[in-house]
Image (cartoon, rainbow, N blue to C red; front, side, top):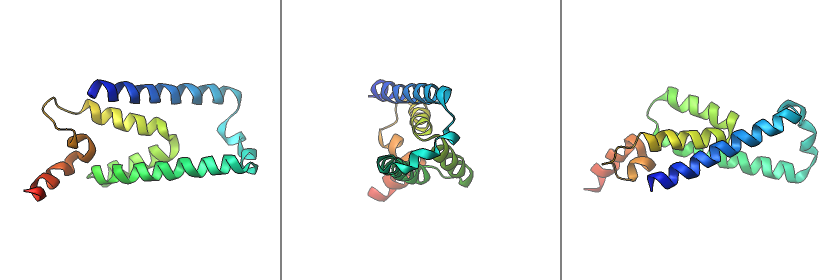
Length: 118
């Protein structure tokens, strides 16, 4: 499972870096403001940022330090799925072979849930 998740999120990271670089070679993201005239662009933009906020809520739950929460918020809102994939990969790589998968989902808060369930 660890290898599968690593492959999926490494693929997402590589794809997003590649497509972002490809698009940036044509035009700066700051020159793309005219796209907001298209309703489907606005809908897709809103969908993406609602997803980023949803993902960030999970990150804020997992992270215990204000600084880490702030850094990841800025990264996710600024880099989108590049930061999302990187966050998941970092946390997959931090897993010990003896860790249960709830450690990936809950991070340091996993022990709080384990204590509460007994």
